[in-house]
Image (cartoon, rainbow, N blue to C red; front, side, top):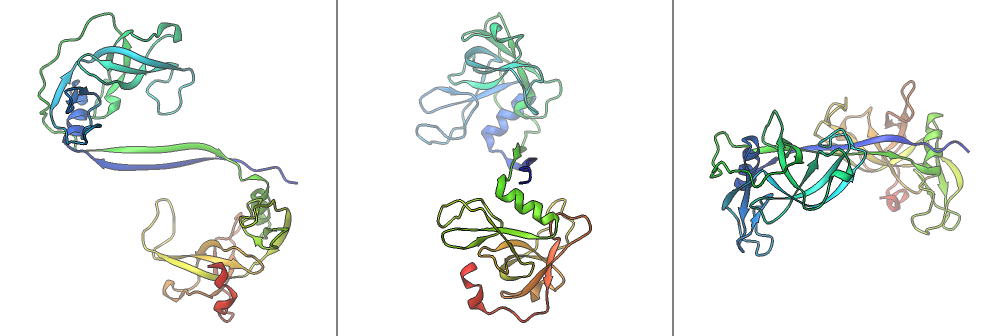
Length: 313
């Protein structure tokens, strides 16, 4: 039995978000070292500000400046900061109720250790040296012994307001395909495709999952399938993907390999995109050193009859 595989993976999707008047004023204010909240329908000052009242759903527009000092409402110690967090040394995550605000703002507190942090302690904002109009313009909070810091009297109007931000969503994790898919991936390295047969319904699943999705019982019997197969369904891709060296348009298809009861997906090549069709017979094309087929191409055989693959659509 080969060793179960594992590999570090990253899912990342940075996207651009446009800002409404409230969020624009809030982030532009941070750039100018000003903290703005918004007045809710019940008179509370909400920081960070929101565009709609959380109770009545009314639109909110009345901005009000609050102090860059405040009080810790609650906290948790972060002993091992991760990539992209506000500080590289251990710090406290704190909810801070700024002076003049009725809700709390989440950020980092730079403290020497958890013994130096307590609920009710006074803190103030440490501003980033370079500010661009983002929450990171607040570098962190730091301990502070004084009272409320004097306000600058901002009305929320700024020159060159921030109109949009780029939000980077990223997830770093270690993926393990498990026993069944490890065997499948290992067989691909030998240019073989191996699935697993269900002991109950006798269907062969490729790629295998270690259990039958229909019967719910474990699968262990390995069955080699293909290498040829039949196109069941397909789509034409017209948008070029980042870091993918394939010219558009191209075709991505579901392919039912001979002997398999589940279609896998792969790219179709060796034929004009507008000639790909359901029932087309195809075979894998390998490149030197590849661990999986680069694409599938037509075999030249007659198209498969619809009844031969209709259950695999």
